[in-house]
Length: 430
Ligand code: PLP
Image (cartoon, rainbow, N blue to C red; front, side):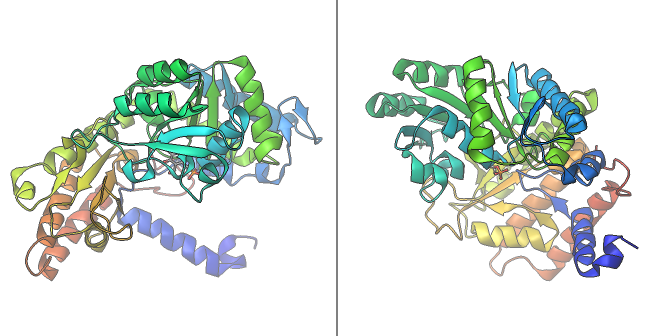
């Protein structure tokens, strides 16, 4: 046989174990999702064998007639989905997409304004040892200490002071909508390009539940695997023909060699799914679930334990728990949730008093649960379980084994009520 189970039982065993982990627990890492089986089918196809350097109709390899069609369809679908005139679907990841945009628009040494990593920005927006921080001169902007929101007055002040060539708007840990028009006004006032990295909220934009950056930014980059629910990968959109040309040559041959046509096929499938009413319904449940979680984590019984959420709520698919006033730290909270079968990540809050490996926050997201069919009742139950375990964690002796056992059972019930991938050849994730 050629099946992975017989050929390589060691790897097959770990894949099975990972499937069981995803099925039995609740994935609430805000950047994750459960993609459709159809997307995984595309990724596991013979397309992985094909070299296709270049672009549809202009390849450096023979035999590209079928992958050309697939890549054209992916481009057309993503353009229609986001109302953009040009799209590049080849970036292997969100990081590659951002590297390509910078490669296309600016030169090493140029100044870039990006959201501070410690305030919710991404590594590729200017972290010191990331390519962005090494190649470009980064000026970070931050959040207003009072409101917890991006301080547009500071963005404007820094733009005028440092005259950046590129302003990056977008985030990995933030719970409010950005003012894209204001970012563009500031960019124009100093002659900078505006890039919006919508990796986190792309699914909400596709569903019409979040303002679109496409009409405002010179370039929009994104991942395809977060709220958008597709395969791991990146995309770049623009409405400007000159910029589109520069982006294409920056992706290939600037940053990458052969495109991953099996992933591009998965992207095409995901873009098709994202244009359906089912997808809009899923994004609505994603948002409502995060709203319910924020509401539960601001109730009096958790507030009196020093637990709250940054900005007091959320407009997106995630909640940022603030543990600065709690005896429980981010690492302990992450571990407690893991003990009952809920996966989240600890996350530094602005001006975090605790060290980066500990932190005073949690980032909790709802996209993966919405994909396995969670509705308002299930999300309310999940929110209550999270509130209960965090509260228990602040008890003098920590959460008791009885509490952990009882909450684990409630998690198992939720997981069983929302089966994930009933079989791997069937669309289990909606
Ligand atoms: N941009 C943002 C805003 C992100 O949050 C992320 C990933 O977390 C990326 C880019 C990078 O995506 P990838 O992990 O695919 O390189």
